[in-house]
Image 1 (tube, rainbow, N blue to C red):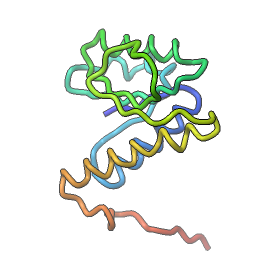
Image 2 (image 1 turned 120 degrees about the vertical axis):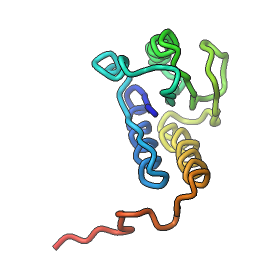
Image 3 (image 1 turned 30 degrees about the vertical axis):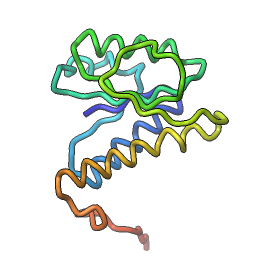
Image 4 (image 1 turned 180 degrees about the vertical axis):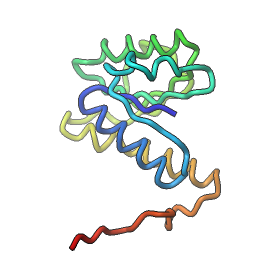
Length: 140
């Protein structure tokens, strides 16, 4: 599974991929959408879903062209976005309320946390006690 985003969306994508790996042990990678052409795009096929963080900001059109590249390779696309017109088809859409741009990273991350939680439940992993992870890190 791939998570992609541009600018602040990439930080959200990284957090989503990390949480999915931590609690469900499902492989996931995060990439900035501008780097997708440098390798990961070659791996896109109908069996590799991509979660796209798509805030409605000044970079929307650039994100849409990336989505079209994924769709051209028949890769399933799932959007985490804000309300507005659908410029591109997707297999699934999760909408969060539009808010102040400073709050977008928090609001756009919540569905990814829930995705990781539900995948972990479906896989039967212990969400409260992920293996090989400590709840706190101590450094001496």
